[in-house]
Image 1 (tube, rainbow, N blue to C red):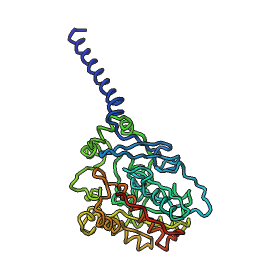
Image 2 (spheres, rainbow, N blue to C red):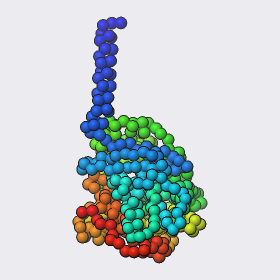
Image 3 (cartoon, rainbow, N blue to C red):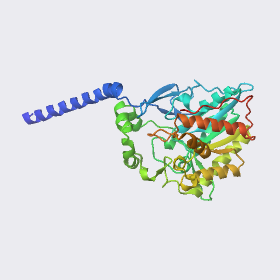
Amino acid sequence: MSSRLKSWLGNLALLGLSLFLTLAVLEHVVFRFILPPDDLVENVTIKGVVRYMPNTRATFRHPDGRTSLVTINADGWNSTKPEYRTATSPGKRRIAVIGDSYVHGAIVDVGEGFPDLMERDLKARGADVEVLRFGMDGAPLSQYLHVLRREVLAYKPDVVLVPLIHNDFDESYRFLKTRYASSFMKLKRDEDGSVVEVPPGEFQYGVADSLRGYRTFRYLYYKTNFYLHAKGFISRYFWGGDEQWSPENISSAVDIRKIGDHQANRFYTRYVMSEMKKLAIEHGFRLAFVMDGVREAVYAGKPASNYEVGMLNRIAADVARELNLPFLDLQETFERDWRQNRQRFEYAYDWHWNARANKLVAEAANGLLTGDQRIGLSVPRRAAALQSQP
């Protein structure tokens, strides 16, 4: 072996060792003790429903110095309840809340999520209730129907509350290429125009999950917001999709280029709500919907109808009215509080509801459940409403 080759191999080995040691220091020192990223929450499919790994917990660290705690219970849902029991207690009313990351409780501590606040408020007013939440990041309206059938019905709820977010609609029938979008039930039309349900696939642990297991990757990819800039590239060349991040096209955290087929939005929304209503009649529970307001309109002092996403609020309200289902648009709730307090309903770095908004949503949702005679949730006495966060 020539001396030049030996020197080249030696330098290569030294480079490899240096790189290994650098990555080891980053992983086990820098991004563990100095710049820790969010903890990892893994996914798993149980009984045909994708959820979080049971009996785990994680701390999320936010740009403003806040941290929020996630506690995944024995059933795979973020909750302050260690487990959900299928057995019911005589006289106790059970409320199930089905949704996405807003129900899961992204950005706020598990105990600050509106389902927990709903329960505490109702109990303070003398009601014997329990609120179970079934929230999964990224889940669309079609998946809520699947979760209701495969998971929630087993708990024999008295009331099912479904919060709607603006990305729930198109993502019910638009097939996203993401880490676990194939784990959600989707909808499509058959040749004769009827709805076909596309069953969710089992969540598959893949390369992306392996990378997410490293603190260095989580910090550099997520905490620097690099994932937003790489979204189009990753979608196209890793997942085989066409999702792209274009800030000028984002409204209410959705890409308005994707939601414009309002005929399809109305068609599939009506299908899901109708199927849920059939289940409500068959299994004897009450069904209700609430929907996020168009917060940009609130801050600008403009009608929600001025915004493309506002059409989704109108569609949801129209379909609920056609089906005689209780529905609350949170637009007025947020407008009223904004006029009085001028405090936003999300943190500057994320569009999810902040702690203040979660309290407002809890108040509004309880007002719907106790005030609409079609639901019939009564409380023995009046008590002070949840205090808004200062």
